Image (cartoon, rainbow, N blue to C red):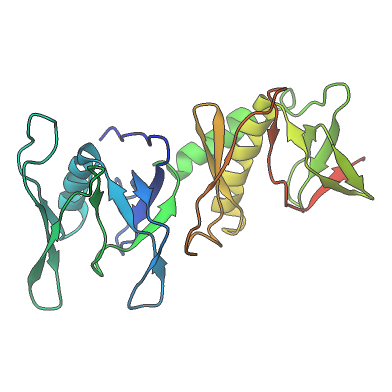
Length: 250
């Protein structure tokens, strides 16, 4: 399945399921409601609204990996389902149905039932891809400082990344600005650290020329949206403005 990419103002969501098998770990682009929905287990879940073409992808994925079934009418001349989308959701004893009607913006609210345990995520990836990206991007050439740059790092085992420093407070650094190639390496390292070191590390991905950073610690809060970082006038990226960066001099 070739995943649909997010449009402006869309982010990625993933359905929390108890399964673990090849192909199940898939993300879907959607608009995200500001409010979160509290599940029976106390988790706060995202409430996505999806385009018709994303619904089709979701339908195929649900059929292969869950017992939830989406009944989507044929498309009309505008490329939208010609009627109400119906979700057939398994319960304790039998299936029940949920009508999913589009809003005035043509998006379908795929939430409102205990079965929709959505959480914010990054585009579909895999541990193999994350490992490969780290190896490809974190090279001595990329991490070599240019004139005027200083090396900065988070707490160990974070490597040192070259950046322009706007403000120094002792060894603490505020607002490091990274070249694009260094920012690419930093995002790859963060994703690898999230996977292999500590899931509290932010994850990130590229959306055209911008970086989107996702902090799982806050993703369940009402109104949370991932941070989007655009290049400044010099083509540099201010990543982790509130993080504990330190200058590395050794």
